[in-house]
Amino acid sequence: MGALSLSSVSKFFGDQVGVADLTLDIEHGQTVVLFGHNGSGKTTLLRMLATLSRPTAGTISLDGTPLSRDRPHLRDEIGVVSHETYLYDELTARENLRLHARLHGVDPDRCAERLDAVGLTHRGSDPAGEFSHGMAKRLSFARATIHDPEVLLLDEPFSGLDRESRGRIVARLRDLDDTTLLVATHDLDRGFDLADRVLLLADGRRVGDVTTATCAGPAAVERTYERRVAGSTG
Amino acid sequence: MSARQYLRVVREVARKDLLLELRGKRRFNGAGVLALLIVVVFSFAFVRQVESGAVVGRGSLWIALVFGAMLALSRGIATEETNAAIEGLLLAPVDRSAVYLGKVCSATVFVTVIGWTTLVGVTIFLNAPFPPAVIGRLLVVFPLAALGFAAAGVLLTSLTLNSRLRESLLPVLLLPLVIPVVLAGMELTRATGPFLASGWFRILLVYDALVAFAGWLSFEFVVEG
Image (cartoon, rainbow over all chains, first blue to last red; front, side):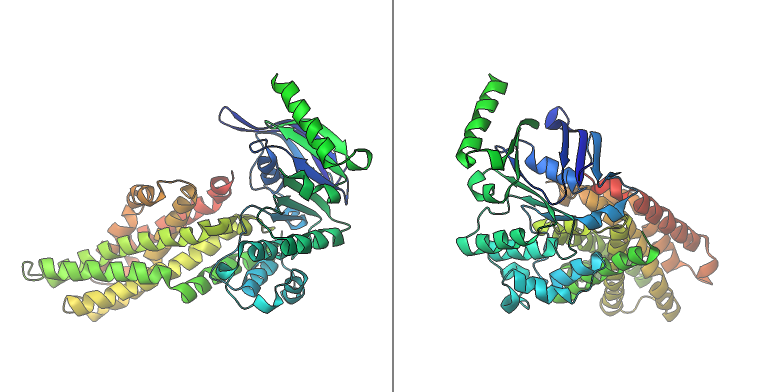
């Protein structure tokens, strides 16, 4: 049983397929990149793993325990970096982190260290609304990891970031040795180096599962993906 | 999940809302001013035509409070919509009803303050239509009415969170739901004698308890995608 297990998980929005019959095991400390075009089901899958959305069918388990409404404490093991930052614009960076630290019952004093880790100590007293996209994303990363989650879910974490911000986030991700990472991206060049596995998604279905140690690189994975997508639609 | 964790989330959500309001005063500036303007319009429209200042005062007080509360609730959820901030709250490792209760607590405070501000406005612009006993009673009735507004309003604003028609949907859904609060409030503003024993007071208490319980029970289902 892996850190995260999905058993026949499906999500439908009316007639639309979000995710279809996905079964998957992810080991502790593994980094899995979810790769697919827009609308392939990456965000839908991450939202279900974050418990922000309920699967239409199937079970998601964390360390063998199914995620369900009566086990909210399992959310303490999950961190989420989404397209959205989940930050309050009127609160300062420090206040935003303190809020999330308190929600998770961790010592708010660790906020200073987390701000430092994402290079925002000098902006700790500034409202989050005054931050650039890259700074807000870094603060969002600090927010998502304030409680040291066992599983970190990242949805397009590198989109819109400059080299410095991207470098800082990648460095932080490399530090998280024991954390299971799921990184959704449509740009493999920016996630491939981190990944142990690349899961290929198209129209909510898994069309491939590639181990990065045995493949030639992101370009090869993308070619495989395009072939499989063409094969499944043709 | 311990009761301590649960209460901590309730407290943090409420505290965050109050801090945001103290900093931006978005709700009070909009809702409080709207409520006062309604009272002013009533004073121009009715004071010389209607003999009883208390009748005009009562009507304007509760109409102003209903619209002020609606605006405050609508602005409250708009803050959560920016950056999808509410989803950050929903990731807290406790039952999501804690988020609901936290938001109901803060909304109750806002609506109560709007009610008291409106009462001051009515007293000034409509020439003190209420005797001191009624004013004392309203200091107790407003928080209870505010709780009814907040319990129903937070649930409905969460329900319409991702709707493009939220601004128009909220009044359509909320107004019929809070009719018992408005009726009880009007009657308690008019009544003489000990109000704690009155049937309307009991209706207000029962309504608050029922709606808050329904919201507490259903919030998780409402916010879940």
